[in-house]
Length: 534
Ligand code: GLN
Image (tube, rainbow, N blue to C red; front, side, top):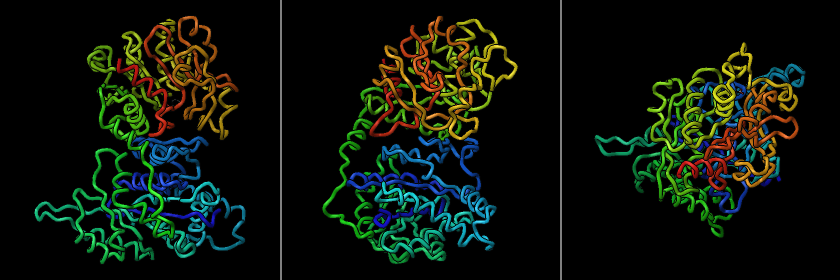
């Protein structure tokens, strides 16, 4: 199968943040809509082995795959666009590449040779790219190279692309994303930065086949011809990428510019007898742009200054909003600023309250106050991971009367650790580490709110946490009206909690946001938005 797989590389020039991830996802979407199978891979040039240890302020959200990999948030976009799960193989960092090469060196695999960037690091990179082709599952592997051409860190990746272009010939092509700045004084789009970034690529021996040009204005024929001439690409391979009102518009913009047709032509595939079937996608966009209602939902977290920290949650609201024909405005609220005195004021006007995931004790008391407010005032509530844990602590303190109830993580000295590190958890952790990562099964109890939402008794959801509901307290919680409606069948760990006498109060130990896609909005978010609309 590998011989048939086509490899498309997406590089970026001029500046970072041009949206390579969205362009890659849009191209993959168009190919998928023509009936091809495609996957997208992100190569990140930093030295961290994975982004799991990165502070969200550094790099935004850490996205988790079914197989428990902690990855770059772009993988979230890939899944949301394609509705196909990614895996560990879809995200590789320089740290991981070096770690592997050094491990091989220590084992003596290089037979006494001097281990060098070329060929050993570049071979490792090429293997990681080809690995996805070898699975036989994909006709297209789109590899997004992180960073900007010219960065020292990206050089081995660009060199790997050069070698692959040479080895694979027509099965391989390069799409280069660039920026055309607009000079308002002269009213012109400038091509020089694009020319320079293509020259930089050429210095590394890579000729791009397609240029996708980010721009605030339309590209006329003259400018396309000029770029084509200076950069050795065909005029129709100069693609305009205007700023879009929503990332979900980008596949349509790219289709209008014939990006998919040009890619197929370059790779020697038929582009005339198929068209992209985007009917479902367009239906989603229509609902997104024609809401019948608007509501405000509060997202209470501690990284709210950087919205990318909660990317999957805010996108899940986009999907669930469209499903309900309702525009969800997220009000970002910092949990550290909440006090008993200001809580009612700060949460005023919110139709629903989501308490976000997070690590560490900063902002915890504000989250607990928020949950008390939602519980007592019948405001629809969804707590995710730490948000569910805080809901349990709040209930223990204010309903069960366990005044010092806490999580062992926040307060190791507490005498009522309702959230604790459990032995059972260690037994089912993937990697022998302390973090429960990736997809785990959950049994949903019949007759509960959760079962009405999921319509299924056995689900799987993705996890990323160390601490768990402490089962020593199960009976007390149940007797006081907290329903433990979802349980991990193998280890008996509590995965979903809810309240009986409340219109919508649910906390989940897992992260439903990772599994919400355009085609399959997550049922929990759909139900939460619906409850908030009433
Ligand atoms: N801090 C909690 C734990 O490790 C929650 C983590 C999270 O919200 N992702 O269990």
